[in-house]
Image (cartoon, rainbow, N blue to C red; front, side, top):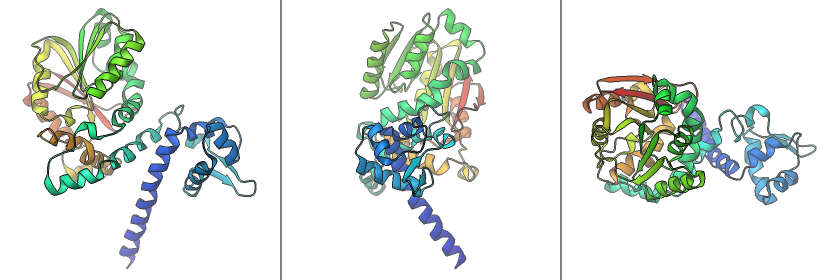
Length: 349
């Protein structure tokens, strides 16, 4: 009886927190958290709605969810609402790490539930173009895990690479998405040339639009299947940020990357920090979320192309094995303090 009650409570907790993920996503997209953080003292819902330029009735119901979840503070006598600095630190664009950004993946992935059910019953996969806003959300999430630390935190883990970038080298980013990493590196290192490949037409167009806005001339973007490019000993560095596990043919992609590097070149790969063995992920703090993202996106977009369906949780053991098989004999794995979700692989021939 006690076990049944415990599981019932667990399910109730899951139901409430799943609903809150949606409301936190709404709070992020409407900038309600940012507005509340900017108000220096507890405020009425009318003031919050007015300052956010939003409909009061919807703000009222949203506040109800966040107050009962004990995320937003509430004084019933005066009917005043507040967001503490401690909580704003993890819910706003000016915080140290905005977890509300990642909550957007829940409604984005929920859009394909009917198609996923069809895949469960019939196999196959769901193509990239079925995911509304996925590139926007991924780019925003990458601002925190990649862009914020790319120049001063991530690139320096490769010995001597910053000096080489300043001197002028050729760099390729595989699976560049909306191209923000390439554009940032191109702006920071004007003597080097940067190329971005991505299968998604939408992602490449976003990258080109930003490149034009920045008025950069040392970067190019191409819609390209990473399994089909071939540049023998052409690049000094190749990067892949959270991209390899999505590929239809990841083995071929890694072989292409190795072949395209110059003899002294380096491959820098960011990918999910997990084990290839389920039993070793039991205490992983993000495991349920990551397996869900894998099932509803990473795995299925690969299967939609008749691919391997590797999935986000392919794990460190499998990643090292595949890098070795592709011809990378020296692989170093690091984890950085700003990014608890990913490993950074430094691979050389």
